[in-house]
Image (cartoon, rainbow, N blue to C red; front, side):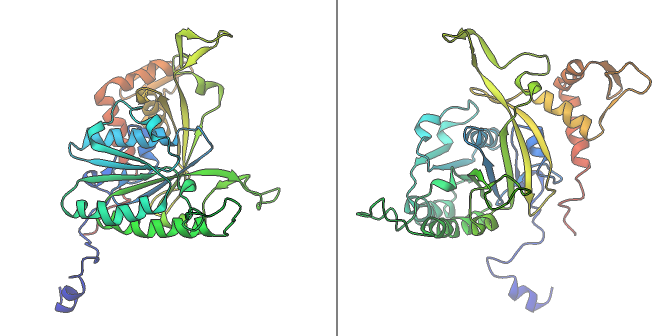
Length: 357
């Protein structure tokens, strides 16, 4: 390396070309094989320091997905910490919903004041990070509820409509947080609402992410999360409904214990857009029934095939012939077969993220 190159790369913000952003140790996993797969890199994970945006309709499970990711990070990283800014100010109602979360290693702030988010992160939390605080994930849930600086000023009337105030304020909040997250390899997760797309006309998409263009440019991954509504999505692979058999309401309806979520990578700056999957969310346990996901992922990537010349519904799982979708899916409860499916799926994305030596 020339002396000029050494001088140029001596700055703190110079990129280290030896750093592998897509290696196993430099990515954060979710508890869902399908969720991991849609990030389309060789480790099937969220690169540390990247930015992820969840968009969905109300009550689809965005907040629960964030908690599930934090819970998985806590299981994988014995030191990792997380911070959530709950701008909808319902964190006190949601905290502790996912059993995998270590309550000693995450902090939730119920606030929508921009100074409580941007200034606090820059002035109070950054010095802690520089001192060794092992922060791995920061979430803003949701971006739509971050208040505008002028609108929230003391004495301002609700009748004062200040055009562009919220958009500019959110932009400034992200300008403070994102560079810190990038430099210290902290993953930033944001959520936003899905809104009607009134500008699209009769032939355009009916819905869009409810954020401005500058905010969109901030995020590397755009994901949608929807409550899956098909008939088969109301039951597990054996046909069991997500209901509590022992609790019924006045009309005899059983308590619902979970639902399936359809996730899709809408757009990606660093991967393949368009990938989608379905996961099962239990309201107490978090993401469950991963063996069903592995079966579907195995089919979609060619690891599991229909057995040629056999009765319809007979699958080849490894070197075994299995009849019936439910029986074949339960083969994925075997840890070795589960690892084999994931390894096969990762091999198909191995070229993405390779570092040239």
